[in-house]
Length: 389
Image (cartoon, rainbow, N blue to C red; front, side, top):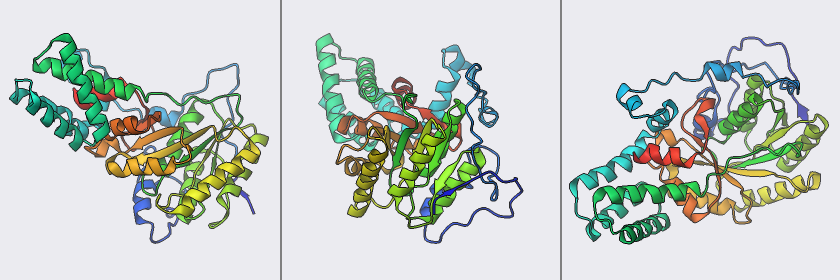
């Protein structure tokens, strides 16, 4: 039986929702208690219905008070302010500091030691880029373009090499900068979210839901990861907190059926956005890929143009594993966008260039912290500046 969760009177919980044993990694990454959207505590017994009604079309959508409350106060050092550094750029640089230390600072240190531009310098640059998970393909392409740029302009100083390297990295990063735009003619606009366990998929769904709701969109969630009871409970808890309806069935139910029913309900309720979770078992399991193919087929029986966006969520700290995951999930060209999470906790942020060179899929968002405002629309120039300068 399909369950549509309606709003009850709120009361203070005695404990958080139970999580199944044996899902420790997923609990650490996705559990609402450990990764709050803001400073409030999720309640256990509050269940949501249609609390996210669209605002009056004659007025501007109201700013989400919770989102306003968690906006950080960014204090930029006076010397950087004098150089024209914007607060949000400074904040991003702080959040990507580990990658900056592993890439930008090492490149600068290399140029401070080696003033002569020769093959030894380029070999050390190659090693530095590879160690930052930029990837072999991207590294070779970028350095070849740097060489040609220097030769064309007859430049031979280290500052010119650094400037050319930054330019080429920015161009590669810009090739996958394409914001996700909700097509208002599609009701609902269906976002299918895939990814292996432990990458922060459920938390990303919650942050996206809050983001779109704060923009005045009517949002619904579909708990399509029916293989794992904890995933369903986590999504329901997020829905309870954010006053967003969640469509779910019992553990072990057919995932495609859950999402199909959610689409039907979303259409009848004139929802703007439906975000569907999916199972996150290891990408090497053939049955998972078959399940995703089935979900897409069933979705298209409801709306032949859906899903309108298929996002894969990957952990930025997993390096080459992230490349393998995208390759496996995209065997049938299922994917239309990428979300890279946990970039604030890893020195391997160069994986973005690797993804850009290997697949060219648009990077929609990057995750650089636990708050909902830390899921940021990807901007290439700001990203490269944060990890290089």
